[in-house]
Length: 412
Image (cartoon, rainbow, N blue to C red; front, side, top):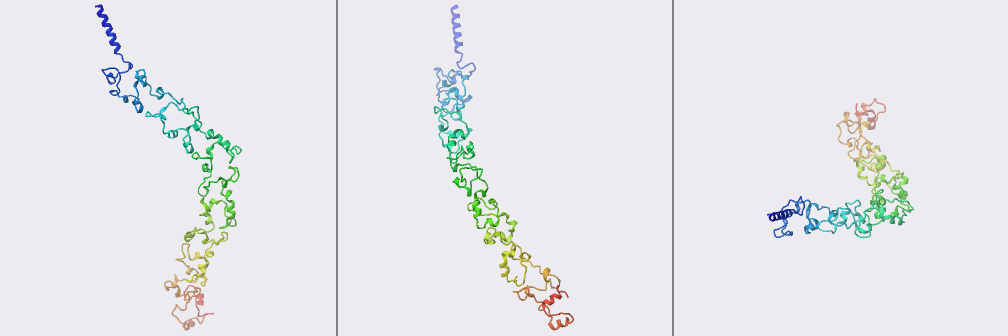
């Protein structure tokens, strides 16, 4: 009886021992998801446990590794998700502990170094995108990438010290290289100069710095146009800027286009307002300025004397018309013209003569001379009767000018 009790005690202890799982007290998963009745060895081909139901999904190379590589104690709850818990940091923490910034579960090989670097505090632009990593990250091996300062001078102090055209040290130039040099450039020459303080565009898009910087100092130069273009101003002949007293502020008339053309003189309205028909010749200065911009007429007759003298219908010169063209014409065109005949000469649009004529030639029979007019050819009377009616009028003459002198309004 005593022997039987001992056997029962041993069996009870053995069953209790085998009922304990090596995966920890919190493990509740059914054993048959990983193990079979043939043995405890795990066959990955028949493994029914879905690791993707955990907080660590198996991607890439993690699908192929042995479970024990990540779970050496077999207590699954003790496994860590951080890369550094399983993988030795060959970079000696110089790149931080987030391996996923550069690496993926598929491979340790990094194929997008430049793209990754763009997310850092020093994006790789211009020549920096073509540089070898180890040109900047110098270390005792090719696996350490010590953090670097991001100021240009930290890497390019030797370039700064060696510069001679101009000498950066003697001229006390700033060590902030980006103030003068483009970060996207591939050299230190003029094509890589950050000239944003004076944009080099259009006519100023030149590659030879010494065209403007004639001395060895790049700071003592005026940003004003005349500072570089005084000789152009003095040598101008068409027009002569000096004799015309034109402003030395080149931007007032010129753009940055090469050759100084086209030019725009906004102050022209201060001398002569360009409007109406004159706008069609606004870009042709020589239509009015025949080589002399200082003494050009600013009256209509000053430019249009030939039109006045050659006009035949009517002949302005013969009719002794005023030379103030605006008295009859507008600046839109010569026609239609307005002529205040009633106010200045004889009322033909009002009074007894209103509607009594059709053409100017009815009274001005000589169309080549509108100073001549006829009263006696329009009215139905003869000289005998007219002389008789005026026999008591002193200084009477049977002549049109005499008619006008006594009848200036056409009334009796």
